[in-house]
Image (cartoon, rainbow, N blue to C red; front, side, top):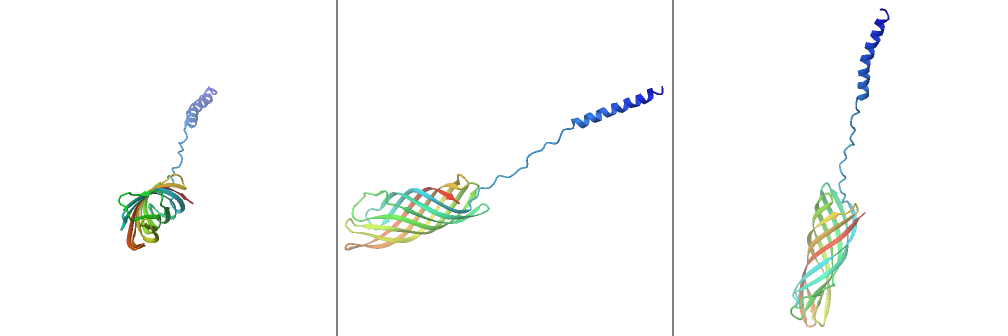
Length: 213
């Protein structure tokens, strides 16, 4: 009898210990989820350079041939400052015209734009990689007027306004499309014995690439 009681006590202790040990082994570890990190916003800040091509649709006053449509090529350099979703910047570009031909309506005097350059501010709103902006500032160019025998060339200044959209292809490279309206006012040209007052406006449509440093 004295041996039975200790053995029974040991058996009861073993029975209670087994479920506790099994519970310790079966307890699952808590699931560890990776920490959430918000995607990095696209960065428009900094200096950029680029190139563009497009069309120049010139309209002249004071000459017989009133219009001239040309292909243009050029380049630009600018600087962006991004403040949240707002963007402000400055840009200068130069476009070479003279790769087309004028209208054939009528005869007599004609005019041509040889090049047009701009120095402009731009402001817009960013939607991550997409930028929508307006622009405006100073425009300058070279007007050539001719009566078929005598030609004169004058430099002129005026203004430019426009709008565009730009999309970030990579962290440094972006593509843009832009429309500009340019007015260079009027100037007098002495063509032989005739004094002709010539004015010009341009509609420019450009597509280009910018590389940001």
